[in-house]
Each structure stands twice: as structure tokens, then as C-alpha cells.
Length: 238
Image 1 (cartoon, rainbow, N blue to C red):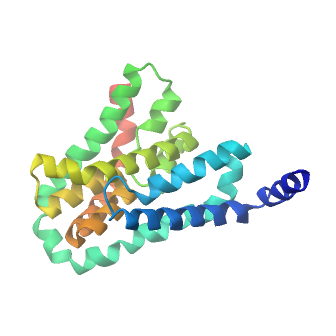
Image 2 (image 1 turned 180 degrees about the vertical axis):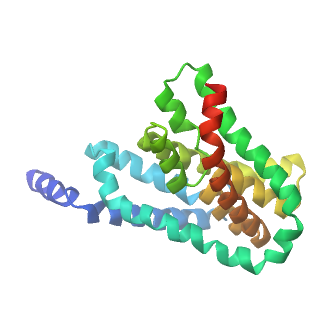
């Protein structure tokens, strides 16, 4: 057991271990999701978190140590987000035709996402730093972390909230839209892109390509608008 502990101590000191374990957890999670027929509850990100979180807790690994390896995946979030421009460009004419309702939905969704988070945090009596961390939860991680840090928030907390928001959106979007009787995949996709950023967009592409295209548009536009409206919302509602 002493030898095992020494080996683990040596491996855990390097970033490659946690990068490898993160990738392995996601591949396993994706297989589980595929075996479950890509059901809404079988979200690969959620399953990967459920695999990794106990491992981090048991080994006593803090977030900073884990992120030394995971930062390589985090870096790829930017290029992955930009890559969504390809299907968006291929459907540019269709997207332009719905520009007006998209703009209205974007303003409403972005304001509701950030505003409700700020008001709920204030209602619970949370500190200004936590409120600033919660406000950008519905936008994509690189943008959310930048907003949080610039406003004096806690980037680590923001990262956790962004992931949680995305998972909840991806898991609930299909049953929620079905329950509401919303069958237009343009509306379904745009809504989940605005509310649940990249994780929701990935789920939209699994369900329907049109939904994925509009989800990508919603995610990108919400990232821009959120960065503009969160600071004034904090002043207005603070």
C-alpha cells in the first residue's frame, strides 16, 4: 500500500494524469450515454463529473492541482466555440430570415438569465463577490470567467456554476420543450443556446441539426450581450 501511495503521489503531481483521467472519464461517459440511447438524463458531461468528483474527493486533490491538467481541455473551448461558425455560415440565409425574433428572444433570455441570478443571489444575502460570480452563469466558460474576474468575482465558482447551468439546460431542454408543445427546432435550439451555452448546444446538435445551428447562434450572441449587460445590471439591481 505504501508503494501504491508513493506512485500515486508521484503521478498526481504532474498535469498529464488529470488530463488523461478527464478524457477517459468523458469517453466512458459518452459510451454510457450511447448505451442509454442518448436520453436527456444521460448527459456525458454530467456522467463524467459524477465519475471524476468522487475520485478528486477520495484522493484529496484540490481544484488548482486538477486544473493544471484540465486547462488543456479548457483551452480548446475557444477553438471549439469558433468552430460553430461553420454550420452557422452554411445556414446563414435561414438565420438572417429569423433575425428579428432572434434579437427579441436574445435580449429577453440574456436579461432573464443574468437578472434572475443576481436577484436570487441578493435575496439569499450573498456577498458581492458571489453575486458577480453567479451573474454570467448562462454564457460560455471563457467569457463567463472573464466577466467574473473583471467584476471581482470568483472564477472557480463561476466555472462550477457555468457547468451546472449547462448540464441542467441540456438535461431538461427536450422534456421541457415537449411539455410546452414547442416543436420548432429553431426556437428550441436558440433557447438552449442562450440559456445553457456549449453543453446545451452539444445536446441540440444530438437532437436535430437545425436546433444545433440555432443553438450555436444563441450561444455566441448571448456571450456578447451578457458581457455588455452584466455590469449595468449589477449597478441597477445592486
